[in-house]
Length: 81
Image (cartoon, rainbow, N blue to C red; front, side, top):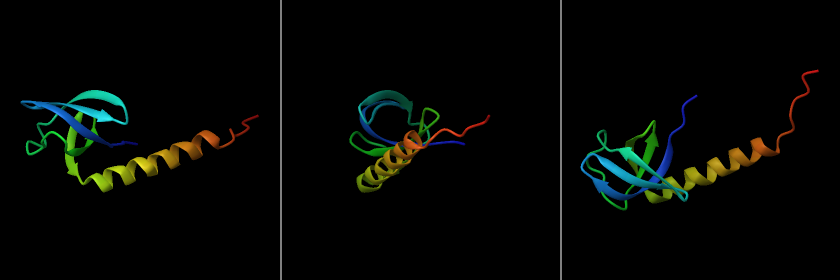
């Protein structure tokens, strides 16, 4: 399963950007999204920004991911024995 996550662009240097993923900073390639500017939200997958997002959509995605991850952490482990 693949997962892409929203990130806010903090800096851009040619085809590379520094992004913020909920407090974690990461350098990514913007080769697939040359229109991206500082302050934009992008969807990041495998070290590349793959599309721009509206801020509301990015924040909604993070809320959903928190819900899903919270449910998985709270789920009881299956007994395999």
